[in-house]
Length: 66
Image (cartoon, rainbow, N blue to C red; front, side, top):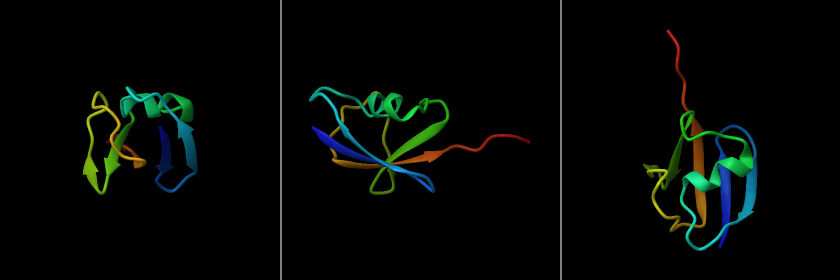
C-alpha cells in the first residue's frame, strides 16, 4: 500500500507499507516515535495500533513542557 505521510510544518514522505501495517508502523521510517506525535486522518486522531486504511495521513508533533 502506498501512503503519503505529511509531517506538519516539515516534510512529506511517500511510503510503501504492507497491507497489515498500522499507523504506528508509518512513524519509524520517518524517525518519529508514537510517544511524540499524533497521527491524524481528515483532522481525526488515529490510534497507532489501528490498521492503515487511508493513503494520506498527517503527523503532528506534540508539545510538552512547562
